[in-house]
Length: 219
Image (cartoon, rainbow, N blue to C red; front, side, top):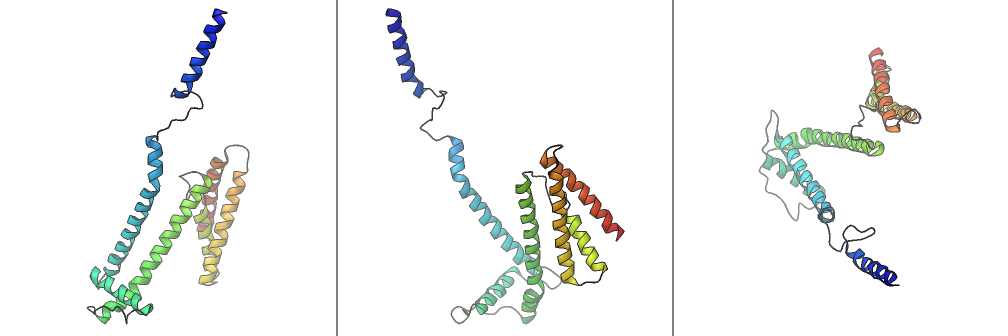
């Protein structure tokens, strides 16, 4: 009887102290760990990073529109762009800028350099989105359009259209079509059960890239 009472008291003491034990199974601490706090503040850091990158991109674009044989100061480039934006939104009657730039500077900035800068931003953004999308899809940071054969397939489609003198629209369409074909072939390689799907996709992409590169050289 005494032994039974001692065992019951020990079990009661264990049940009382177990929730307070830091390593007890199923135990949840009441305080926030540093990792949890860092995770909670990470969206703010990401937003600040995006805002900083957006500001830096706009600043670089303004500076780029002022560089060249016919130099335009960055402040004049900004004033030209703001004046043009006010004119397009019909707000020039409310808030107008005093013109300190010449007609030649307006022509160079708006008609020559602005389209080039916008095209560079669109092309660079498209490449960045395609690379990030492929990396997220295949869950591999090494994946890129070059590795899985998309670039070589698109190049082959464009070369075929150029060789047949089909025009610029056909060049774009052929590039897109053969890029999709390359992706589909690489995905078929990933269905092979001989190894890891990601590894087979990467190896298949290298093979497809080499194949389409050889076809481009042949054409």
